[in-house]
Length: 105
Image (tube, rainbow, N blue to C red; front, side, top):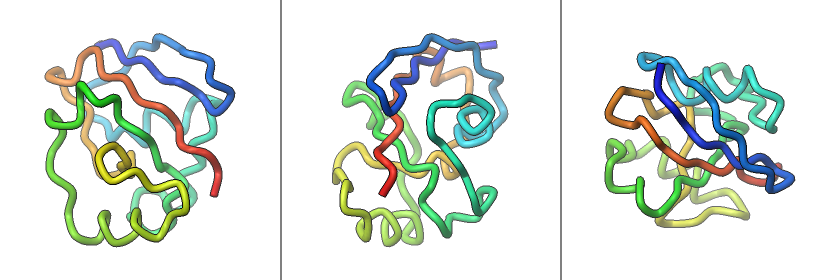
């Protein structure tokens, strides 16, 4: 198990253990912090939108065009930190990752 910090929609910070090999969405939807993941990871609903802490942005894989296109349509899109958690694999290299669950849009 690896560690991850999640800031929920109320601004409360949670330190959790996360299993490498899962999508961030799979980890976050099991928690009651606001990630609905309605489409189940198909990159079509944006209900798994998160903000990645600035110190971690460059460590994540680059966005694919379908993720970028969907994110740009969101009213709370942040060009440097917005990601869809369904598009990011949680690996040992991301031990210590910090993310914030985006507002429901």
